Length: 571
Image 1 (cartoon, rainbow, N blue to C red):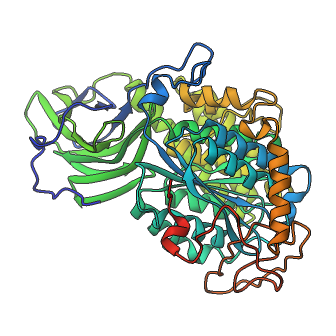
Image 2: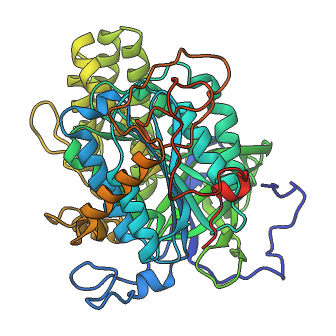
């Protein structure tokens, strides 16, 4: 995205709309400051999205007859690619079956205009469902592809992401909202080197990548790094039964996106020392900066905590410290509309008193607590990774005592529980190995101010943590509630579906398909990305660099000779 020039005026471009779903406001830590002293002060610039239309009373987005409610009628179609780990470890503890159930839920929740593609990876990557519309025929095809998935082979995460990006890059038509859901329960030490180029390609398309780490053996350091670069939350899924709920939360959020390409411009009349945010900050000067936020769900807010250094040379009774404005694309409009918000100012009163007695603004104080706690958790995690558990626990304990003795806000108790839980998971190498995933999940959630689920997380002491309730929206909650209904999986549970799967497997057998029992050989890591097969996972067809054996053809994909046709939606 092009950032506005420093010299550009603050007033909105007359060609831009000023009406949109986002609002902008500012707050300052103290409402008054002494005239004759230089002083550092915190301020808050908040971007907040309006609530979308409410779901039905029972939390549903569709009526009993299947007609969309206002929530679904307003939202734009999505292009969604599920990049799924089907390595050998997914065959244990019912993992693969729970994964299938979660994917079937996504299929059932899709509108006919949504498009879905399924990519599986193990020792290589395969696209088992082309990007296609989720009308009834598309849902049936997606369900068959899902039920056909089988576990086996190694774990090449980069291969799966590469193929998922190819699917989206080769679209002939593009929906406004697109994302990749990446789920893995393993480790790929060759993946990290490929992350910068993969994420650059995703950013170019406006595609969010949402990583899900499953079980205790996945590489949460890698997925945390991926989420940090992608500006999305990392989600830790401890139990296989929670996969569906986690997927439901993120799809519910994506379905409620109201704004993309959000650029917040800050123009200060004091020195801008720091902009505390996980999002990209472009500094134009000591007094100007632009913050880029990829997207915002309905009901979400993004708080930019700024640190200003105010000089002592002002004689005015009221001093403007900062002016903020935002530009963004309003997603739910019929045509693409760029919105420019009015300029909002952050001001203080200058008084003759040395230092007025006053309480800090509650919202600014609350966001300072959130940012400081998150920063301490990040540093403690870094030290625990290095084996410095005593230092890590001291950092957490010190911050916890500070919170205990300071003014309490609506989030203080939740943050205290996060610190206590992190401290208990950093006692030694053993507790950190098992507990690091939970800590990294919580850290990214607070940093991004976004969660994908409401799965109850308990501290090691057995206390239920409440932080997720701070960030989950009503639309996400409605989706999550439906995902937890016993037996609710969608079209795949309809009569005759299992027979369709059996028939498809027999058809595969006549075309050289060897089935899930076919051998899959692991591949050594290399500096270049692996090549990809077009057959289903576990088929023995692993592309040019895969194991020898019959090459499978996919009956749902008859056009693999044409790369564009292969990954584009012809419906």
